[in-house]
Length: 233
Image (cartoon, rainbow, N blue to C red; front, side, top):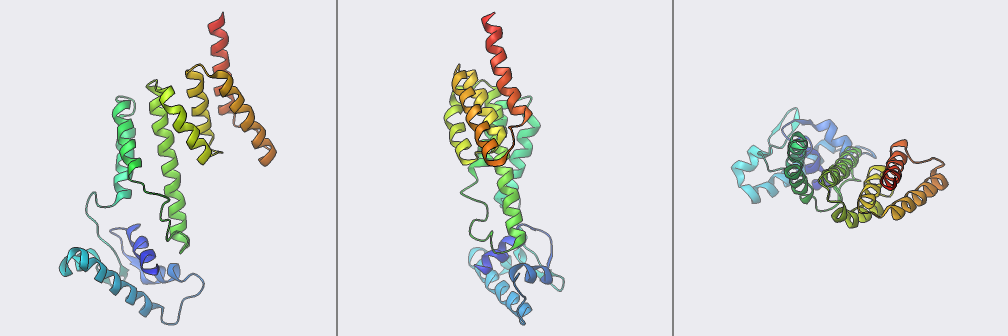
C-alpha cells in the first residue's frame, strides 16, 4: 500500500520532481524512520520493476527517472484520467452557451472516467493525498451540477428528476442539487412536491445546523410559485 501511495503522490505531480524529503515526510507522517532514504529508494526500485513489467526496462527508466533532487513520473497526453477529466470539463465550459448538448455529452464522458471515490485505497495514507482526494471529489460534484444545469436548460426536466433525487440523497446538503431538483419538479408541474421538499430540507437545516437555506434556494422556490400565480391570472 505504501508503494501505491508513493505512485499516487508522483502522479499528482506528473512531470515535476518531488523531493525525497517531501516524499519521506508524506509517507511516514508519524515519524521518519532512521533509514527513511533507504526505505524510499527500496519502494522506488519495486515501483520501477512494476513499470518494467508494463512497459519494458528502457521505457520504465524514462517514465520513472530519478535525480539527486528527487523523483518524478512522466505520463503521455491522455494517459492520466484526471488530466482527461479536467480537459473535458474545460472544453465543455467553453461551448456550454453555444452548444449545450455537446457540452453535456463531454461532461458525461468526464464523469464516466470515475470508478469510485478518488484515491479510495490510499487517501488516508498522507495528508497531501487526502487533500487532493477531497479536491477532486469536489470537482466531481461540481461537474454533476454542471451537467444537470445543461440538461435543465435544454428542457429535460422529467429525465433529471430520478437522477436528482438519487444525487440529493448522496449529497443532502449541496444546495445547488436541491435547487435543481426543485426546478425540475416545478418544470414538470409537480410544484406541491417541490415546495414540500424545500420545507423538509429547511426544517432539517434549522434543526441540525441552526441556519436557513441560502437566499438563492429560497428565491428558486419563490420564482416557481410566482410563475404559478402569473399563469392563473
